[in-house]
Image (cartoon, rainbow, N blue to C red):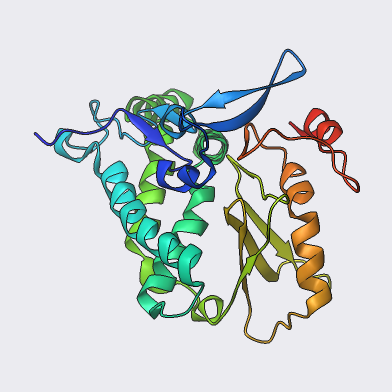
Length: 286
């Protein structure tokens, strides 16, 4: 049987490697313990993971075969391998020379960072439990025979339906890469900054800006690729001017913290700068 990793990284190691420094080859990370922000050094492989996060359960009635339990994580590992090559190209050469396939690979990787996050998985598990309970209650109300519907409910519970559903959903997203909106591979910006300014990242590394005129329409997507590199993806008709780019650079770290991540990562120790009190922001949003 194929050797399958136990630690499933929802913040991929290859991505965090851009923030390592020093002889210990670690990065700075910040988290909150007992309402107090604590910072320290950690290796990328030792953070942003949960054991068997994406492993399907193959108990009785689940319909999952033992050989298929690790198929989601295997697909994610393959995607991460391809995305790591695209990341290296973007940091080195920007968007020059990227093929349409490479752009779609990266966009797919970025969007799936939402779906593979434990918070998202847990939310969908809870939604599945509520949906299942609502269906059973409706059936009892319409047709009675409560004991039969409660028996059906126990059957679904025994099948690990709620646990497997968000992971199967993730697998379906991984298979459906061709459905990505072609509009979001046309207008990319790779922005470089210089020392001493550095971009942070986190376990929630992607910022999605929503159109002010249409609350459900995405204007652009942002993600730091390294401490000095920012990736921005926008619709074809979105216009980037110098002032906007400057504003996105300056405010990126603060907007990232406002997503209320569990962990924040940086190349150097995080401290206040002239315009932004990062220490207070860490205390407020972590």
